[in-house]
Length: 101
Image (cartoon, rainbow, N blue to C red):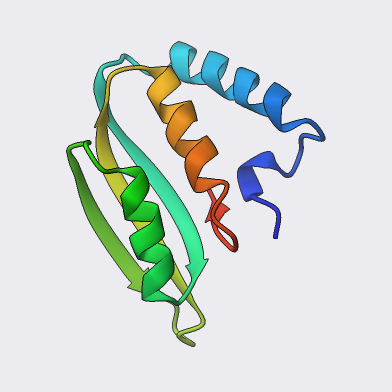
């Protein structure tokens, strides 16, 4: 399943370079950054995502879709710079079935 944030880019490397530039223009790091993901309703997937955030200060909220098939996961995390945001997206992007918003 393709990640939503990468869907308009044939080359993931170019996407992440572009993302970093946009983050640096639009954010004043260090700051709290909100990561949003959609996953098939599976507690194992949430655990995999949270492993990426080990060592970070974060808060988690999640909500199951009305039919129970999907879960939206929001992680509000303190990050130092755009590089950390990109690194987190790259690591979560390797988890099968996760859609990044």
